[in-house]
Length: 415
Image (cartoon, rainbow, N blue to C red; front, side):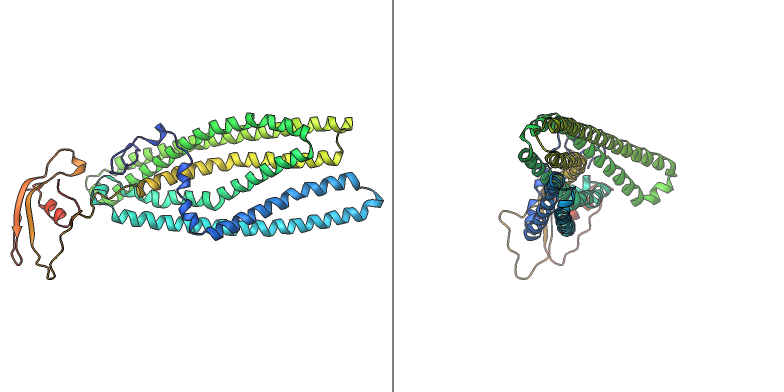
């Protein structure tokens, strides 16, 4: 990554900063092949999620019947039965929730472990030209901080988001079944709730990616300083380095604070809109009870489903920011996986002799380092070293002696 917070394209060249482009959730879809490796565990987690959500949605049905037919001496046995059923439902809910938590958390750990291994294995296969421009600290940040962010999303946030989606759609469906008239008020409020979520969600994604890039820059700078600490101390530049790193850390803090501020605003707006709509619907329902259009138990059932749906939508606004951060982290990791090694196998390789001769030959070789623009290091170099022959390379610093050995080891290809 370059020092101005830009990423690297497939050739190792800088690309525009993330804050200047739209970040979507599409990078997370590239995790699907990793999930597919453990489809059995993912299916079991989804089943546990559905069972837990279904158990939650059963509770309002028992509450309605208890309100409409209970609270009298003749209905005491009925109330006991309803409470017994609710205890059984609570047991199912607890068991399914525990199973969901275990399966989803271990699935997230497994996926991130595989992703870390794949990224590291890909890094070891990249050409030397990539490491000439990439910062070690920035690469380590992607391997550690970004994968941890993805683990948090896959292991927790995605599970919470799916659970709240099921509660939202399940609660909305049961709201329509319970009272179509009251449901119209709720459905009318949904666009007012969703539009701000979408708008603020984009701002959160951009700020989250900017915060991650800024932190990676600070880590890369620190890694360079620690690697050259003797040179740093020899020239007594400790104070300058400390000031520069402190400024980088402060910039990372400002970026993180901006992302957090956007998420806080998103959460406040979502919760206010969601629960204000619940209060409005509750007032309309109370008028319907007074007019005899619905029973108190049915109103209670509707309100519980409305709370489930509203709570699910409100919770989505909180985990949405974490998922957006994970999307930015996934984008950064898959940028590395998308970089192709510049050193590729030859189209028509020459077969080595059965007894390797140990012969080296350069014929009119021309070479320039990719990071140095048009500055040619070797131009028209030709020589041959036969088996058993010794050849000394003599020249001033920068003449290209080390470059010749880099080409022999094929760290680079000639032009």
